[in-house]
Image (cartoon, rainbow, N blue to C red; front, side, top):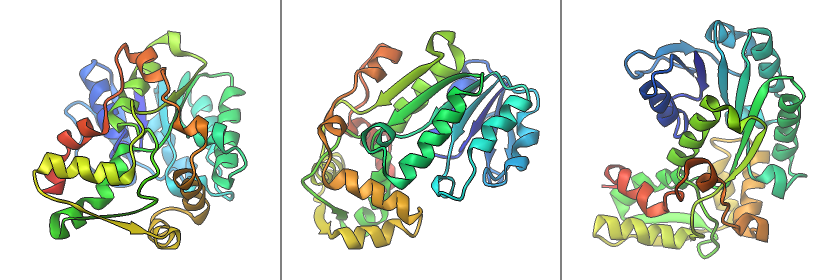
Length: 279
């Protein structure tokens, strides 16, 4: 059995589906009860309460570990989840980390995530670590304003990074969970092209066939919006990257193609699959 945490999210949902379609027994973990694919077991658990994950891990051979925003704070103890997994008989953990662990190692949220990576590497378990950059699905935050006002509001409109389609992350995660050749793999995951927020808005407009105006937010405005959903440390670390990416954060990584045998999907592909949210 394979346990997928964050099973209702942009990565966890397609990963759960892919594993079920591959014939694996899957336990989907989320905080609240949700619909899951046929044959998939659901367990409600809060990763901030490590013990609540124990029922999900019973009989599991592998774990996909996705840490929500509140588990990136200094006082959180996500490394305890790895200890519980090992004690429960789990043999393999695939961790969704962050590109910033390598490119911005001193950022507070990156220090915490590095500690989780180190715990995993030292656990004696089989492991793989995925380090994605920015997510294409962050554009979903614009869906309501596009539908109701024909507007995208974002900071740093002409500064781009190679955002990754979460479906590609899920497919790489599935490969790492199922194939021994990825044991010890450290994969940096990016999209195939650098794209700015203004260009993303233009891509959405082209797909809709109707104009979308771009409104540039200040850093403070963007931070105020982000901290409604994630800790301030994580918001600041993210804004540091998207305001002034360093060369390593602009690099197009070959790792998606190395694992999957194909190039990563462009932002336009993500938009095409999710266009209904913007109509």
